[in-house]
Length: 164
Image 1 (cartoon, one colour):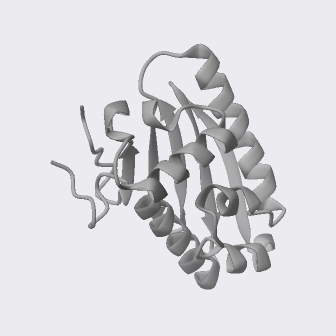
Image 2: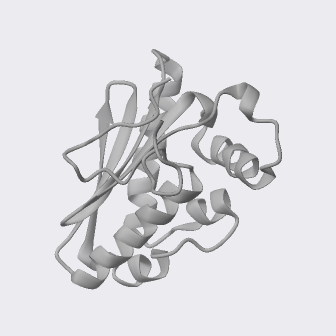
């Protein structure tokens, strides 16, 4: 299974979760994140891939199914639309639920919501939320948010989880 994806040299994380047989094991915290993620996003996290990409003006969050799945793709696209609306309104409760803790960067992102733009878009097997700002404090918060997400979702190219 491909574990990483390089996007313009700026990719922080591409997360393809461990194979289903790897779900069982000693890492109950990761399994709990995966389970809560499935509830929040509506798709199996073990057969979906995340990308958390910091960019000079913000970043992007990508979620796609590993294979052709029209229903899963539609669910992801609706989730990304919902995330863009919630985040634009300063609501970061879903990431807090998925990670069972306040997520780094979200307090600043909520406080500076008028300086941040969120746009959902479709991708072949899912969707993305593009996050943009010209506010340096907001961009730093976006980057902290994306870095935490990449780490907690076990992004393959995150330094603590290198690609094979």
